[in-house]
Length: 258
Image (cartoon, rainbow, N blue to C red; front, side, top):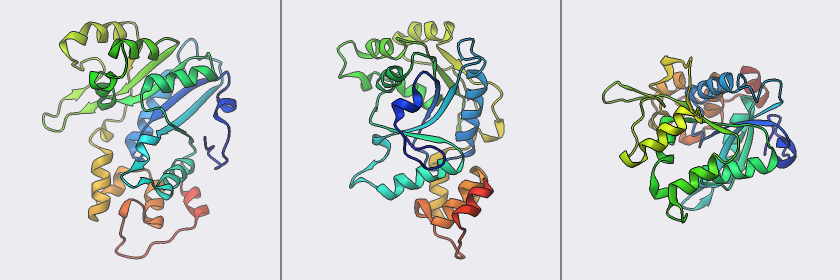
């Protein structure tokens, strides 16, 4: 775990007896959607009866799976992403838990307080994909039993379907027919909740599209990320960014820009 000031701390100590809100991602790069998702989730999380007046720890979490390339872990790429999130004032947790139920189990070993997980519709869709649970004897039902065993809720950010222009939300998401009753149960019992008050101007932003634009030299990507993120990407030439004019900015200046 890295605090916003860059200090490495023991996660178990930092999370002890706290309510936890976590957003998982690869953060390649951090976009305006990344922060809007966290803002919306936090606004709803703090209103939960079991969270009010409790100390909250907000985490941006990356799994080792999101840090590994064909040649192994790129330490520089990993640290650059941590630096960007730190410049945005975020605490970063690096875990080896590919599955959400394993992440939840770890967090609940650190606290018995409520945990919220912020995610987009595509991630929620993947959670309902049974191919990810072939190693579990009980399959998807066992995974969900573990995930929601304690006091946990999923907060879901909507997706703007590019082809149709339709807005897919937690409320209208379609899952496999034999899983619909399970999904309806989770939704009706507010274990899954759609996010409210999101910024519609951000819905068209996709991190893979931003990354592609950076690599293609299309400057339009700068409008899709927070200003401090744009400065750091250009100053450090991250994600294969190639400036037409040399760019340099000291770290202190970048932090002040954030």
